[in-house]
Structures are given as structure tokens and as C-alpha cells.
Amino acid sequence: MLLQAVFLLLLHCLASTLGQYELCKSLVSTDEGSVWEQYACQPKSTSMRDYMRIKVDPPGITCGNPPERFCTLENPYLCSDECDASNPDLAHPPQLMQDKERNGLLTYWQTVTWSRHPEPLLANISMSWNKSLELTDDIQITFEYGRPTVMVLDKSMDHGRSWQPYQYYADDCMDAFDIPPKRVRDLSATNITRVICTEQYSRWVGSKNDKNVKFEVRARFSVFAGQRLQNMDSLYTRMESMKGLRDFFTFTNLRMRLLRPALGGTYVQRDNLLKYFYAISNIEVPARCKCNLHASQCLLQDGNLQCQCEHNTTGQDCQRCKKGFKAKSWKAGSYLPAPNGTPNTYCECYGHSNRCSYIDYLNIVTCVSCKHNTRGQNCQHCRLGYFRNASAELDDEGVCIECNCNQMGSVHDRCNSTGYCQCKDGATGAKCDDCLPGYYWKQGCYSNVCDEEMLLCQNGGTCYQSQKCICPPEFKGALCQQPQCEAGKDCNAASSLHLTTATVLLCTLLAHLLATLTTH
Ligand SMILES: *[C@@H]1O[C@H](CO)[C@@H](O)[C@H](O)[C@H]1NC(C)=O
Ligand SMILES: *[C@@H]1O[C@H](CO)[C@@H](O)[C@H](O)[C@H]1NC(C)=O
Ligand SMILES: *[C@@H]1O[C@H](CO)[C@@H](O)[C@H](O)[C@H]1NC(C)=O
Ligand SMILES: *[C@@H]1O[C@H](CO)[C@@H](O)[C@H](O)[C@H]1NC(C)=O
Ligand SMILES: *[C@@H]1O[C@H](CO)[C@@H](O)[C@H](O)[C@H]1NC(C)=O
Ligand SMILES: *[C@@H]1O[C@H](CO)[C@@H](O)[C@H](O)[C@H]1NC(C)=O
Ligand SMILES: [Ca+2]
Image 1: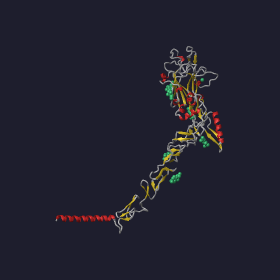
Image 2: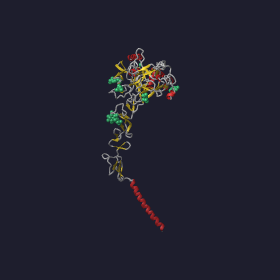
Image 3: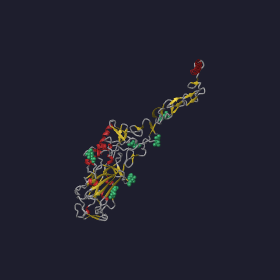
Image 4: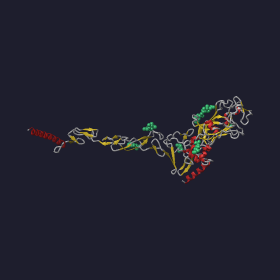
């Protein structure tokens, strides 16, 4: 016990030097020997710029083919710069947005100039990773020669099949998008995932003063974790409990739609359109691979990022159980309880519950509201009145079958593990809806009154549905064994018949008498 406590303390120290959730498992010495302890884990944050695949649209938007002259907003009448795609020194291809700049040499992608004004100068920059990623810090796009006055940042979570706006940017949000301007600091915990339009990164401040356009992640994190992100536990707790928070920072693709370049003033100067264009020198995307808290490493394999899955999970995002572990349905790890989280390999709800609840004082995690007629800490049992479907895996929706005990024939509505109900006396069959020999069914099983073998109706009586003998008139009793009138005994039915005959005779006599008396 002491050893374990010391170890846990050690682990605590280790975890704090490593940073949170960097360890998936660890060999623990206990009184029973060494065992692996499993923890929720996630890869380090890294610069995803290095892994990004970049594409610009429309074709021909990159300058230099044919070679072109351009000016700058600060020196609008000194138009001596040239872009030439065929000359490496004067070319500005897209890859210069993600290169490592050496010796302070600025390199950037540049578009054609706005020579076709008033037709808008539009450009799309699509960034894909073929991997789910989670933002860990601000996205930062560096524009040389001024930031666009109108642009949209979009994201996709499904490899570009569907897109959603992530943030709008304009020097006048109402004018450009009909959305009132907001800043991230206007947001509170409840609406932190709101998509806003900001004017903060589009106003003209001189092209050298502020070149960056940001998507603020740090400021959003700080709403939960404090100004210096000193309370990350609090953020991670929110990630677990607040719907949509984790997804808000998750993406597989990003897209910038550049809709209007920097103007350097209020109006477009039609006589000098060579000073309007877009130029981007760098795109920073600090993020980590999304591995569902089942991997601490994410490596490049065959040109794609791939989580190095632990906890018997597999897949690009550790989103599946490994072969042979299919019976345990997959579940993402959890940041809770702090500080090490739960890998959720032991706490399984087998897909019958979406929610686990951590019970602090018992230090256990338990499934909440098990569905599909299951129950138990892991939804691993069938509810009373149901039994386990032997041909279904534990995570099958049809794992529990209703007992369906006959209400009249069975003692209660529960059954044993093969579906057999407990029958009342005389009842039989798996569901107790049949009677044993010697019993008949009438809302339950009752002992036979008569039958064809042992309990024969006598004296010519016939057995009606084992329930009663139908006797000839002269006999009575359950089996027609009694004559109606036994010798030497008063026969009620017979004497009443004689009485009736006597009464009729008497009445006839009286009538005659009366008739004789009245006629004389
Ligand atoms: C940019 O992408 C959007 C969305 O797919 C599309 O509607 C638009 O035409 C694209 N613009 C250019 C210049 O390719
Ligand atoms: C994306 O990644 C998956 C899994 O690593 C791989 O099978 C697929 O070929 C990749 N697609 C592209 C376009 O690279
Ligand atoms: C977010 O909520 C705060 C207060 O809860 C409110 O003042 C603010 O206007 C909201 N922001 C948006 C964009 O709705
Ligand atoms: C993963 O599978 C191995 C081999 O069966 C087992 O020993 C180990 O406990 C499993 N790990 C987890 C976290 O379930
Ligand atoms: C038992 O499970 C099997 C396999 O999933 C399924 O096909 C079958 O319908 C289930 N039986 C019942 C009675 O639900
Ligand atoms: C369930 O009950 C039936 C009938 O009593 C019996 O034959 C069967 O062996 C029982 N099954 C189990 C697993 O106890
Ligand atoms: Ca560059």
C-alpha cells in the first residue's frame, strides 16, 4: 500500500514535469507484482505548418506568369518591383507560406495585382492535413504589404466534404457581412464557441505595423484556464462537460477566402491598381493530433500523420478498438478525473450509454442511463425481465431479450440466463404458457377434473375440456358417479315432480267440484 502511495506521488511529480496527459501507461509495482496502469494521454502540440498541404485558387492567381510589375502601398509611385515565376529570385509560389525562413530572408506567396478592378480580387487558400487536429494556440497568418480588408476563415472536420465559417474578418463587419463586430474578449463561457466577425485584424495600420491576422485560441482558453492558462484542469474539465467545446477547436482542413485586399486608405485608387494584391509570408497552425486521448505520440507515416495508439485502440485517430477487442465497444479517453484522466478501456458502457459519471468519494467511473435494456456500472448486465442474447456481443443493441414470461403461468416476470421463466404449480414451458399433464389452461393451470385416462367420467358422462363431466340426467357428481336418486333416500328432484303432478290433479279435482257446485 505504502509503496503504491509513494509511486503515485512519484507519478504526480513526473506528470507535472512532463506536462499533462503525456503518459499513456506506466508500470506500477504493487504488493502483487508489477502491473500496467493506464492513463488518458495526448500528443504534444506542434507546428502543423510543416505537415500542411496547401492549394491556392483560382488557377493563375499566383503572380509572375506572365511576369508583372507591382508597387507597394507605402511607395505607390515607385513601381519597380517585379514578380516572375520563371526566375527563382523573383518568384512567389505558394510553398513560401510554409517554408522555414533562413537568415532573416523574408519569403512570401504573392498574387496577381488588382488590374481587373472593379471585378473583385478573390483568392482561396486551402490547407489540408488528412488528419483530425486540435488547435492548441492561435492560428497566425502573416501578410506582407497589408492585411486583407475582407476575408473569411473556414474549417472542415470531415476532410473537406463539408465546410463551416470559423471567423469573419472585415474593416467594416456590418458592411461586408451584415454581422455586428465582436471581439473574442466580448465572449463569455457560455458563448465562447460563437462564430464572430472581428474588425481587429483588418483595419489599415500601415503595412509594417501589424502584419498578423489571428484566430484566437489562447484568449478563448483563458476564459476557463485564467489569463496565463495556469488552470488547464479547469479547461479540460469543460472540454468534457461542455457540448461542442472540444469540437470547436477540431479540424481536418482550413480555408482562407480572401475577398478584398488592403487598400491603404478608404478608396480604391483606380489610376494605380498595381499596389493592390495579397502577399502571405507565413501561416502558423499550432495544434496537436486528435487521438481521442489514446496516444501520446503522432508520427508521419507514408506522408500522413498517424496517432501511435495505445489502450488497445487503432485507426488514424485511435477511433476504433483493435482486432480481438471488438466486444469492448470503443470510447474516447476522458480528461477526468484530474490529474491523469481515464483511458476508458476499463470503464466501458459497451455503446449502451453516452455518458460516464465520476463518483468522487468512491473513485469510480460509472455509466449513466444504460440503454437497450442493460444495467450495471458498465451496462454489462441485462435489466430484470430481460436475458442475455447468447449470439450477440455485449455491445450489440439486441444484447438483452425480453423474458416475456406468461403473466398467469409464471411466478414473476424474471427469467434465468437462458430465458426460462419460473412457473407456478402445473405450468410449464420456457415462458410458462403451457400446462403439465394432468392440468388444463384457463388463465393459468388448474388440475384436471376429468380426462381420458385416470379421471374418466362415469355412467355415460362426457369430459368437457378437462374442466367438468357433462352427466346424463340421472347422474351427478364431478365424475357423474352419483345417481340423482338413491334408493331409500328422499329424492328432492323426483318428489317435487310428483308433487307437481299431485297439485295438477288436485286442482283439476277442485275445478270439477267448483263447476258442479256453480251449475247446480
Ligand atoms: C473559394 O471557395 C468557395 C467555397 O468553395 C467558392 O464558392 C469560391 O468560388 C472559391 N473562390 C475562388 C476564387 O476559387
Ligand atoms: C489519408 O490518410 C489515410 C490514413 O492514413 C490514408 O489511407 C489515405 O490514403 C490518405 N489520403 C491521402 C489523400 O493522402
Ligand atoms: C456572450 O455572452 C455575454 C454574457 O453572457 C454577452 O454579454 C455577450 O454579448 C455574448 N456575446 C455574443 C457574441 O453573443
Ligand atoms: C490490451 O491488451 C493486452 C493484451 O490482451 C492486455 O494485457 C492489456 O491489459 C490491454 N490494455 C488495456 C488498456 O485494456
Ligand atoms: C440476438 O442477437 C443476434 C445477433 O445480433 C440477432 O440477430 C438476434 O435478432 C437477437 N435475438 C433477439 C431475440 O433479439
Ligand atoms: C434455466 O432454467 C431451465 C429450466 O429450469 C434449465 O433447464 C436451465 O438449465 C437453466 N439455465 C441456467 C443457465 O440455469
Ligand atoms: Ca515564408
